[in-house]
Image (tube, rainbow, N blue to C red; front, side, top):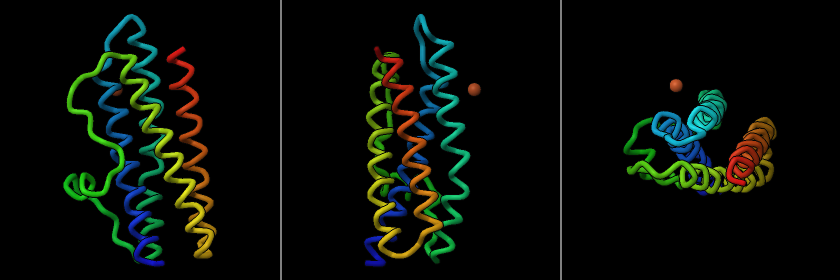
Length: 145
Ligand SMILES: [Fe+2]
């Protein structure tokens, strides 16, 4: 259980970092008639996600798991794919929405694993991350209508 559990947590951590970087990428590079709204929405999202990254790493350390902390480790682990081109604004919203839904699902699964392991402090944190991503997903989805 431990190895699978710890790998799932490291994957969630790397994916969360990659997600924040993508939101920042889109904050910098978005263009279009609603530029300023999208620029601010992407900022709000990466700010919120980065604000949870340090605690996430320290939760891993409390389980005696080393936090992945390099771009090469992140790219080996992440379930959120890099965006190397500059998509059109609606594609940015759609892609980040898909990634945010993926993150909510990753946190739903890792929450269950933490509960099974009796790590209730960590499971609270993971539940909060799932909730945060549901809210990011809502704002991205609403911006696409
Ligand atoms: Fe900025």
